[in-house]
Image (cartoon, helix red, strand yellow):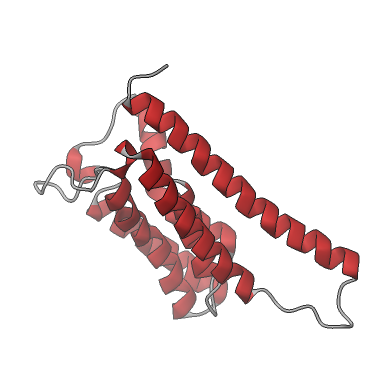
Amino acid sequence: MYVGHVGIALGLRGARSAPPLWLLVVASQLPDWGDALLQLASNRTADAGWSPHGFPLVGLGALGAGLIGARITRSWRGGALAALACVSHWAADYLTGYKPTWPGGPVDVGLGWYGHATRDFLLESGIAFAGWVLWRRSLPAFAPAGPTRGQVWWDAGLAWGMLGVLFTLQFAVDVVMSHHTMGLP
């Protein structure tokens, strides 16, 4: 799951006392970035349970994100939302791929929807859209004395443009993934 993680971060940003969107996006994608850094550093993947996607390191990432979120927002709720963004990564990835659990536990579990491009596109785009809607609802309504009409159109265009970019990225990922799993160039 790639775009779905951003959708979850957007949805969490719509909650009261939420930390900044950048923190939620980083927290929601932390295991993927951990895997990428590990592969760059050692040119291999982590041992099964000690992968950045395994429960021990996801928990550690959630603790770190939670502490940063609580510090930024000055509330335990902000910290809990940042921690939830990180923990949501494993649950979301369970649907699309196969992920490790804990050292000595089942090596990889999941539903493996990456093998079904249409199903994956609908799932991730749906999560991204739902998160985007929750985020948009949280934005302050423009008061009559507020921004000019042109500014309202600009802000709405940026928000819709972001949703379009997310859908386009997800479509591209699913096309590439379906070609890869089918052995196509």
